[in-house]
Figure: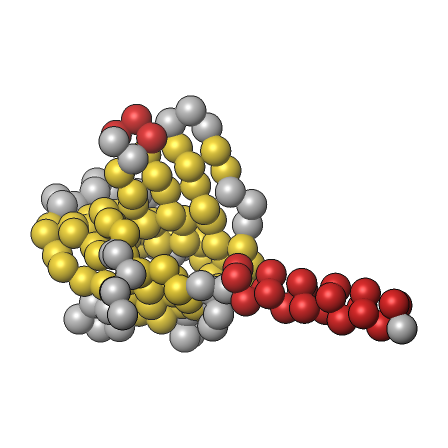
Length: 141
């Protein structure tokens, strides 16, 4: 009987841990910039920052990132990588796939030496998008 209780407690612990770790994070993008490769395959210059006000959702329950821009960008998270931390940056990288099946990396970066400014980089093979983001507070019930 004690083995059964132990297994039940252990199972509840694993379920509670899984539920606690699966969350949805929401961000507000305040500006963005684009970097593109030219016809020779060389990276050009970053575009000027443009102001924006759009929502970005990181949903670990559904393993996806959604950017609610004029054209909704939906990215399936295939792999959560270990965070990378240095004196100046805290980076959370993800391997993702878009609707066309193309693989690329999305990274959420906190710039420690810039008042903890947050950015999200979407690294496509020929285009990189960067969004300056802020955490959206959870709505109060």
